[in-house]
Image 1: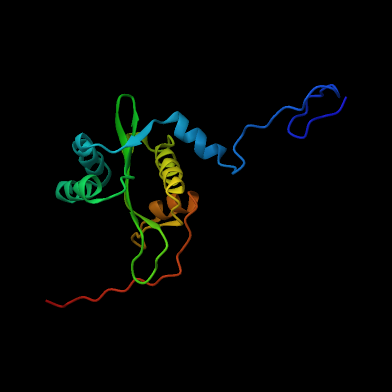
Image 2: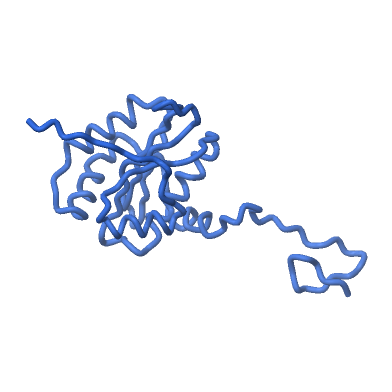
Length: 181
């Protein structure tokens, strides 16, 4: 009996070969993480949970920052792509991003991911992977070319996470100038 190309199970010559319905883009791990951890679009009522996650993760009160970022994501953005993850009947992670269709002379669609957070009690459970996977899937639907983000040089944990999710150093130099007040 012949063997099909995607199985070691022999089939009769007159029997049709088994069809392979798996995704051809090789993202089975990402798709699985999205299936295991529910991810949905961010809603206005999520703000207190976002602030609480950030406070537990950083020890800082950045409520004003998150209220401003959520307002931008919910009201000022034409494309809503910010997401939250839920487990055990409560919000355990979030990712905030926006789509830019050009800046600094570049005209290709680009997403800017500026905030990601996972409740410390839910780290190492795939929450960040599920959020990033769903963000990438949503951006691919929008035909966005790439995602850009910035981080502190010494934030080794975040650098490692972004490296694991496929980010690489960009060919851009970000400059700043202190105004010396």
